[in-house]
Image 1: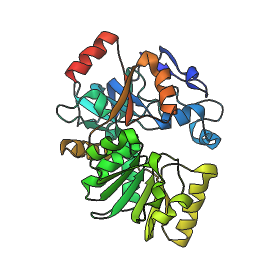
Image 2 (image 1 turned 90 degrees about the vertical axis):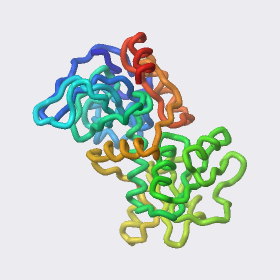
Image 3 (image 1 turned 180 degrees about the horizontal axis):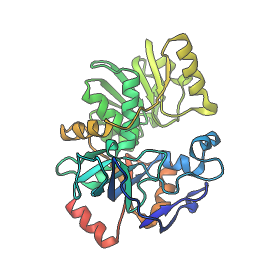
Image 4 (image 1 turned 180 degrees about the vertical axis):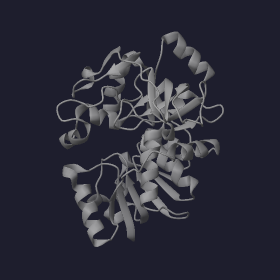
Length: 331
């Protein structure tokens, strides 16, 4: 099968298109013919192995897995023993476990628990959205966000941010989205009660306090945002922060049981994909696609994601050009 193969750490130039062995569905697994995948900040971080300590999890000298990619949408090709929920031909989407080969290939085999049926009428490219929503939902669960509580989301235009706006609104929270000028209307269209343009002033001087302040792009800090928090409010980050400061602050908060600073730590994927499908079917969540690239140009997708300017997700179309065009029309 054709795949984007990674045999060493480095810049996007180390991602090459080549042939890889087609996986098979083991017991409890589903073999997916991938129609759409995505390139995420997580993929970029793993590619460059930055920060260095992540090699403890991904491989010290070279990547343990040779095919990256977490999100996928496609069709069931085959099922392994004990799989009862799916059959060949089913349209599905989901999120690959991070320790095995991923979705930047024509086929991927994944556990049944990380797969859900695509909502009726959904397009493949719009369904390759799980990773950002997975982190967003982890934030919401960790801070136990409740209906009527207020949350400020810094970086509400990325994959995590666009998902968090929608998931927070789905539970009845009051959402303030902090974005660039060009993304103000997008934030409002996703349900944000208010959109703040960070490029025309200091958003930390709103003179207002929130139950939760979430930095989902790693470009601000607790020390800058603490004036925005209510007395018992929580600052939550999806990144480690400069010099790992968010981890240190979160550890201190855990020791003192203040809950003042939290670093998002997603739980198991199982069950989440079905939850997200339900939100999609209820009209409470939709994928935001920034750009699409054919598999052959995946290195360019990595370069674009590394600019930090993407909106929502960057999709990789898998398959031959003619097949991709047909899938876009039918999906």
